[in-house]
Amino acid sequence: MSKSSLSQESGSERKRLLSAECNVGGRIFEVELLLLSNGAFSSISEDKTPRMGAITVAVKTGERSRSSQLIPESKGAIFAGMVGEMLAEKLGGIAVVSLYLREELDSASMKTLINEVRKLLN
Image (cartoon, rainbow, N blue to C red; front, side):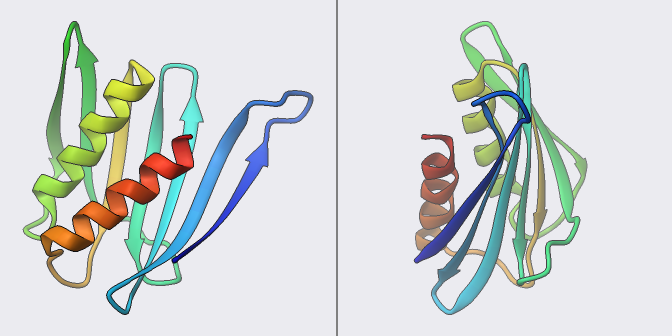
């Protein structure tokens, strides 16, 4: 389940700030996206209060997207890279992802959260 909201740029119809709160297996996550002309900032935070976490940067170069951890974290590093690369690919630019987790994600939770990010983009 998720609750979504958006802000619109003044004087424009372009959606820039997108957010959703989702309950994944009893864990609450805040998912936020700030869309820019050449990419996005994304924050995925486990808790009702958004927090900074591990930072991953992904860039689309040519036909591929690549990611790199700027501030590593033992929990969710692969997941943050997947989200960043998906955003960079879809937006054709740069994606910066902040991921704050209290505990490791299982594959079902990862799939649900990636789907939430995709829903925000559509």
